[in-house]
Amino acid sequence: MSKPAMQLVNLKKTIGNKPIIKGLDFEIRAGEVFGFLGPNGAGKTTTIRMMVGLIDITEGDVLIEGKSIKTDFKGAIQHVGAIVENPEMYPFLSGWKNLKQYARMVEGVTDERIKEVVSLVGLEKAIHEKAGRYSLGMRQRLGIAQALLHGPSILILDEPTNGLDPSGIREIRKYIRNLAEKENVAVIVSSHLLTEIELMCDRIGVIKNGELIAIEEVRTVENEEALKEVYIEVEPMETAKTYLDTHLPNAVGVGSKELSMSVKREEIPQILKNLMEQGISIYGVRVLQATLEDKFFDLIGENSIE
Amino acid sequence: MSNFMKLIWNEQIKLYAKKATWVMFAVLLVIAIGGGLITKFFGTESDFKEYGDNWQTELQEENAQLTAEMQDEEFGGFMNDMIIAENSYHLENNIKPQPYDGWEYVLENSFLTSVISLFTIIVAAGIISNEFKWGTIKLLLIRPISRTKILFSKYVSVLIFALTMLVFLLLSSWLVGALLFGLNGLNPMVVQDMMPGYAHNDVLGEIAKSYGFSIVTLVMMATFAFMISAIFRSSGMAIGLAIFLMMAGNAIVAFLSQYEWSKFILFANTNLAQYTNGMEPMIPGMSMTFSIIVLLVYFAIFLGAAWAAFTKRDVAGN
Ligand SMILES: Nc1ncnc2c1ncn2[C@@H]1O[C@H](COP(=O)(O)OP(=O)(O)OP(=O)(O)O)[C@@H](O)[C@H]1O
Ligand SMILES: [Mg+2]
Image 1: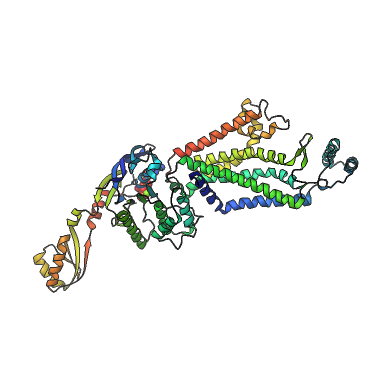
Image 2: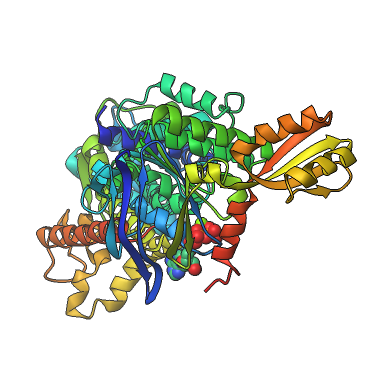
């Protein structure tokens, strides 16, 4: 088990008399992607603001690489790169000049490093255009570039997929995974959509009304052994059904071409082999992981904003 | 470059990346050129008159003619009176009159420092609140730099802007003045109307004094706007309040001058020139030292309030 990159200790925030965050306790490890999931108004942004010292902590603490953001702001924040809420930029400066602003605020960010980050987020073509003319997706990329400049060990992204098209989301997912796996960066990604972050996170924490109501591993061993919904496209259907009725009673036909069944992952190869030996052609196999989503829906329930 | 210098550099880049800043310089330049042209083509003729070796006789003749004119006409007497008085000062003190020149034009343009004050207020009012407006404040404050340092880099940037404008005004006035009117040497003596009386001083000293005193109001009002911007995070409010106070300041003091405590009002103290040339201060009992202390106290309060608001408060929402 790797050491925690960031720790939240009984973190609370009260604005006026209203408790917004009601005691969060969890940690994020180096090299993992942590999903921070919750409906609108759950307190994701408020928590992130406390993590980066933009707002005061009412009670509790945030420790970054062991340093308190409250008492050792500089020591703690130097490890962090972040986008809080929307990726806002100076509209009258080019993307490059925006990045230069932030490069000047830390030691040792060379022009080469800026170029490296720009190409990482795929913004080379537009980097010398004014940021005011950027699309939301381009601003999102520039925001991520800004957060990565100084090579932080913790990256906090508040709704990074907001405004991105599907291919943009896929790309972000790819380099977030890369950062975690290759550079051992701890990444915190907030979202109110499970489907958007499920595929990039190792763990997901669910927050509702300022409370953490669940922390779930996404790719655990148990999960590998859990029953999965498997869809197999076969031909001819009748032969397949006859065979499966005797061997796998829970398999059912879906439409005229697909069979659906709940099996363990390790059983899949054998089933396919058996089907093929029966002279059945297989056109495709789909494995659904819908179980996680169902679970979160149960947890979150109706999104009632208090 | 040190950390702090880089922050200031950042601020200057942001400032000059905006068209509005260049418009401010352009406005100043247009006024400097326009004022020069107006003086050149519509100015009082006697100002430009060149006198020969017999300048004493010329002045006496001029005075006699003006006096005669005044008996003929009822109007225009005021102008003539002034010219006669000035001529007499020259004669009594044996100072040969020199034609109006570029240096005098620079000196006269010191009133344009109030335009610079206006522009500096606008810049000071925006330098913090704009970061909130753009949302970039969040990105600025999550760097390993204390909020105090960021605040003061912004404040120093405002002062640098004011100084740049001041230098720009001096240079453009001098150039325009030199081209249109020529120069009477490197540091000529000028005769000034002190109301009452006249004085004979070297022009560089007078320029330094007149611009120097006007910087007091400039710095105080810019600092005030900076504070409002830090507290309320709204540039409109900061600009409005600062400009209103700058315009109404003297009226406020005049209105309240019957009260003893009115001498503690900021605007009773911003005009340090009131203690020079043997003038009576606005309110009895005031002195240069008193005013400087009052100004320093206000200055400290403005910056202290800005600091407290900027470093202590939550940065949430837009
Ligand atoms: N300055 C404030 N004053 C009062 N209430 C606030 C303030 N800031 C946030 N809140 C409240 O705190 C709660 C959490 O807000 P927050 O922005 O953290 O939610 P979120 O999880 O980021 O939601 P979203 O998915 O919409 O971004 C909301 O109910 C909001 O009304
Ligand atoms: Mg949010």
